[in-house]
Length: 250
Image 1: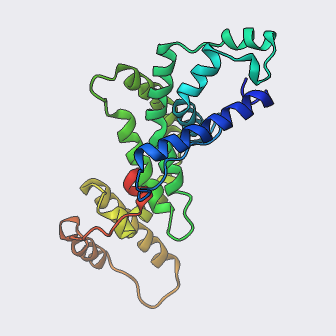
Image 2: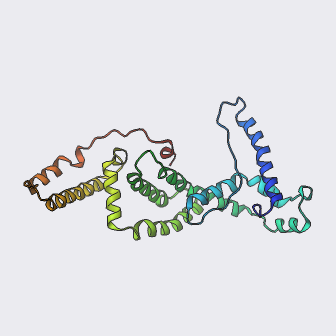
Image 3: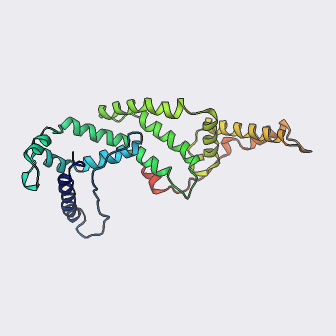
């Protein structure tokens, strides 16, 4: 309704600016802290859960403004009687606001995951394996005293499994796991089983490549086993590098 009416759009933007000044003055009296910013409402792209988070988060942030428009629409801003009646019929009750807040909380990690995988100055294939594992952990971990959020997580988990487990080929999973193994940042978060699996894959790939080449020397099975023993997961002791700010928030 707001996006379809220029009058409501102008009113909403003006209210954001007016309340933003008050918010900055209250929270940042000395002007030292970073300003809290609010933006216009947007529509999401339904297959991109990060855009749904932005839409809901902005709606939740502007809850008071939306309630003012819905519960007490004012004709002096240019609304007609018909528009006022239409707006009053769109009242959002307390449960619906709670649903918006809960879904926003559930989708927040998907927003940060998208930012993590949108980088240009670092490899993202290895990070994708780490990101998917963390999203899966987020959706399977229940939050105490939050039945609504937990229910939403279960619903999203079905779709998540479909896209990231059922529809993922063995080759795709192997590529991400090997990339995560070769990246020092993601290696430290792999389990012992994942490390052993990645090492076994690498040994098989090495053997296949060596057998396909016409060379005077070949890698014997004993040397392959020796490489396996020397690269055992128990000998891995890496210090974790500092993470990106977006990764920290995710």
